[in-house]
Length: 219
Image (cartoon, rainbow, N blue to C red; front, side, top):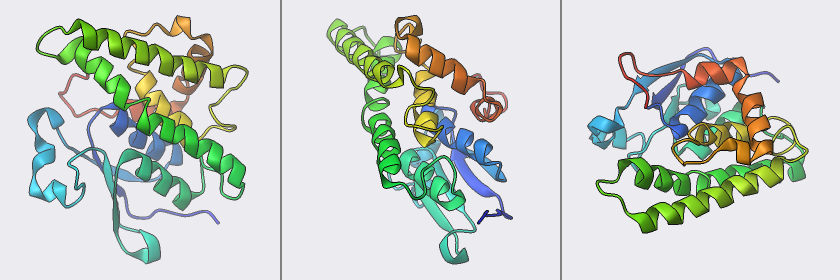
């Protein structure tokens, strides 16, 4: 049964890889949503009001006014948000095939647990640390190459990461989109490059990736 969303889902967001997972997902689902920008550069995530929505003070989070049983629900943590939306609307996540579901979930967790946290550290030490630390730069360079290599092997001979296009692809793409910050050349990972171009050509992905606060220059 198709779910019709009548009231917009409220997205609490900043244009980071994790934030863009959810904006892309909402665009793919074609459901109405509003955006409240949480400027993490100005510490807007540290307010008591936002803590009530996201206890760990991270973006993104959502508030669905039409949650389970018709009552509102808030969901924080990007992976949990993707799973919630995929279950509710029955898209981009296998609904009945447990083997297919496990395949998607393990690659989603690969992103949440590794292809995200470690690449964020690579980005930090490459570009944001107050001083250059060669040990840290080299450590996370090697980890980045290993993670992209893992993804490349999985994508060899496949169009998508886990069968059909899914929340695993959506989650991984947002981070792969910052490959230059990880000092990774996608030409070294041809299967990732083909996948990256394929995902990036989707109109909904383009729209979701373009959600940026007016006046903010996305770095």
